[in-house]
Length: 114
Image 1 (cartoon, rainbow, N blue to C red):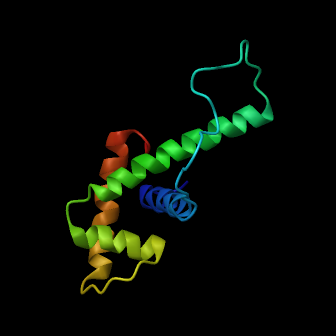
Image 2 (image 1 turned 120 degrees about the vertical axis):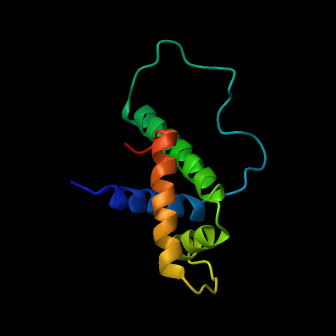
């Protein structure tokens, strides 16, 4: 059984992968929001799309939670640890632990961690 701290770290790793794969959307959307197929059949492709959509929504929520951290040192620690951003910090370890604790609370409030 994973601890809550490990679950938070795993979610942040997923968020970091999502951040690295970000591409600015230019041009036409991939899907038209006004049309849907009638009597949809669940196939492997549609379930994969739904899983991808859920992962994107979860990562978007994680992104907002990281941005909402009160202490700039906590945000910097998360970006340094998971996105390999370069920051000079005196108390990196303390800031990272505090950020994980704050994100644990934020994730449970947003309903993405239980």
